[in-house]
Structure formats: C-alpha cells, structure tokens
Amino acid sequence: MGKASKKMKRQAQKNAAERNLQQCQPKVAELEECFVHEDYSKVLEILAELIQAGYIKPDLLYKGAYSYFMLGDYERAAQWINNTLSYDNHHVDARILLARLCFIQDRHDEGLALYDFLVKNYRAAMSQEQKDQIMDSTEYCVRREGEKIRQAYPALADFLQVMPAAENIPVQAAGADNKMKGQDALSALQRLKAKLKAAQVDGSCTEPAKTEAATEETQDKAAEATEITAQAEQQIAEVRAQQCSLRDKIRILNQFAAGQYAADDYECAEKYLKAALQIDAEDAQSLRNMAVIQAAMGDLSRAQAFAAKLPQADLALLYILKEQQANG
Image (cartoon, rainbow, N blue to C red):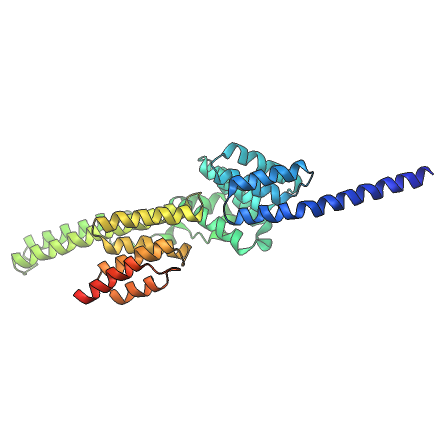
C-alpha cells in the first residue's frame, strides 16, 4: 500500500508539472515575441510571472539578463547572468554578455579573457551570430591593442586574425626611424610637403611659383580630406563597438551623417549612412537620408534608387527629387 501511494504521488506530481508546462507555453511565446521586438520591460514582467509559476529555463534567464543590460541596469544584468550560468555553466550567450558588460565597465582585460576562454573551448559550437558579436565588440580593442591581444590572448588573436605588429603597420618611409602608422598619414603628408618646399629652394624644382602654390593648396586639401576620412572611419568603428542595440547604432550613425550634411561634406555623410545600411539595409531613415545625400551630390538616379527601396512611399522626398530633376 505504501509503494502504491508513493507511485500515485509521483504520477500526480508529473501530471501537475505537465499541466504547468502547458499553461506556461503561451507566456513563453509572448516573452519570445517581446524579446524579438526589443520590448525589454515587458520581457522582465513576463519572466517574473513564469518564475513565480515555477517555470525556470536557462535561456529565459539569459533573456532577463540581456533585457536588464539593454535597459542600462548593469548590476541586475550581472546578477541574472550569474543565475543563468548557475543553471547552465556552458551557456555561451551568457558568457558573451558578461564579456560585453566588462567592456562597458572599462574592465577590458576581463572581457578579453572571457572571449579568449570562449573561443578556446566553444569555438566549434558557436553560431555565426555569436562569432559576429565577439568580432563586433572587440573591433575597437583590436585597432588599439592588437599586439597586446596577440601576446596575452592567443586563442582570441587567432579567432580575430590579429596579425603581428610588423605586418599590421604600413611600409615605412626610406630612412625613417619609426614605423608609420595609419593615423600618422597626415603628418607624413606634411613632411612630404616640407621636402617639396626644400627642393624648390635648392633649385631642384623648376615649376613656377603659381604652380607651387596650387600644388600646396591641393596637398592641404588632400591632407584635410585624409584627416576627415580617418576621423569618420574611427567614429564608425567606435559606434560598431558600442554596447548598445543595433537600432541605437543606426540612430547614432544617422546623426553623424546629418552633422556632415549640415557642414556640406556629403562624401563623409555618405560613409556614415553606408555603415548604417550595412547594419540594416531596409532601415527607412537611413534610406531616406541616403537618397537626400545622393541628390545633394548630383546623382539623381541613385537618389531615386534609394527612395524606391523605402518600405513606404515618401511623397515629400519624391517631390523634392522630381523638382530637382526638372530644374537640372
């Protein structure tokens, strides 16, 4: 009788667990939907209900951690990462999020060490999205601390294909004592200009003074353009490395583009918008702004092509393009 009673009790518990599972499934589906649409406050609300009902899964705990992270509550994000790893110590997404949290809190060495551990032990099992997250969030560190990563974190360096410093640096000028880095291109151009000037004083350059002035002006413009391009590329890399949502990255890049448009630097604005469209090729704001930039640069056919990609027709934009074509 005792054995039969225990068996019935176990069966009752099993049936209750199955009923609970079935009852929780709609809530789980709702949570997943909210997570996809980045409604993180709602995710946390539903997660609390599921936990109260006794439905606890590592992936759901991770989504809670990620939601706190995206809402800027890094302390709770860290707590929920620990909760996730206590249920599943091999949860790769949770460890990636922990590394990103380290970068946000200026604990770069800890973040890099976590990534080094991940690629050393889980690389073969990682999804492409997980690999992309690691690459995106370390891009800035690779640019700034490539040699350090190569020496201190060999597995990560191999994963990121960080080359030795000698291979990363452009060919140095003849007779130069120091290697010329990419960011020194402007000073190199200025040194070249000084040599040209000296050659003209020595009589080795026979061009007239007017040509010399024109050459210097061209070099000045080239130097300025090089500097602006380098700044834009650095800002784009920094935006990509920021620990924020893709939507925020697109918004920031569009803001940079607007600033360059206001300064009449259309080519630089185009760079920012290209970077935004690489994140989301169908983003309406980026497409609309790119159409305006192309029109400002005089390429109406490309402007119309970008306008045609908009998910909904923008009559104001089409009117502007039509008027510009008529007046062209």
